[in-house]
Length: 84
Length: 167
Ligand SMILES: [Zn+2]
Image 1 (cartoon, chains in turn brown, green):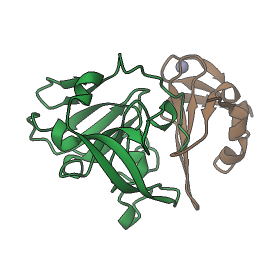
Image 2: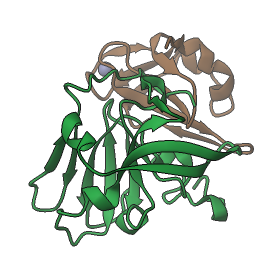
Image 3: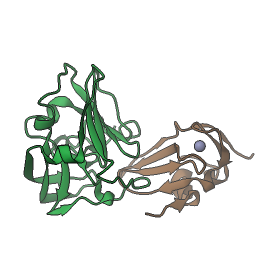
Image 4: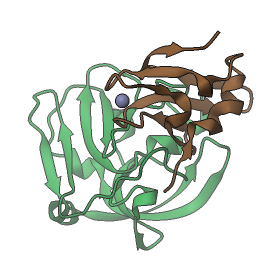
C-alpha cells in the first residue's frame, strides 16, 4: 500500500502544538538522521497512525485518535528543532 | 482493516512460528508442521475498537491449546510478536481453553497479506487489535507489559464487554 507524506499530519498535530510541526526537524532515535517531519513516511489506519523515519524505517511516532482524545507517542524521536 | 505500516509479505516456505517460554528454548513450527496439527473451523463475532462488530466470521486455524500442549511455562503473560515488528500483550489464560487460534483462512480463502496472512493470531473475545496480524512468535513474560499500541493510547487488556478501548 502507498503512504502519505508528513504534511498529512499538519491538522491533527496542530491540536497538540501551536507551531506547524511539519516544518520542525527531528532526530531519529534509530539512526540519528535529522530531517524535517514532512519527509517522514506516514501510514494512516487502524489501530492508529504510524510515522516512520525515511532513512531507516524506525517508528518515530504514533498517533491514536478516539472520539474525544488524541495520544502522541514520540519515543522514536530524540529531539525536535522548531524555528522561532 | 488497514495496516499501519508497510505490509510484510512472507512466503510460507520461509514462514515460521515459535512459542518461547522462560527457558529460552523455543518450540517452532514451519508452515508444513503447522498444517499437520489439528485444524479447527471457528465461527465467531469480531469486535473492532472503532465501534463495529462483524457477526459470524469463519476462520480456519490451529488452537493455541494444541500449540501450547508441549510447552512448559509457569509465566502468566504473553507478548505476541509479528513480522514487521509489531507487538501486542495478552494474558496466557485468555489464549487457552478455546479462546485463541493461529488462523490462516478467513471466510474460506487463504489470509492475504493485507489481512495478516499468511497467518495471524485471533483472540475474538478481545478487541481486534489484539489479534496480531503476521504473527511470528509468542514470548512468555512474568509480568504484563504493554505492546506497541498499548504503549501509545490503547488499553492494556481490551475487553469489548467492558469497553476497554483506551487508557
Ligand atoms: Zn532513522
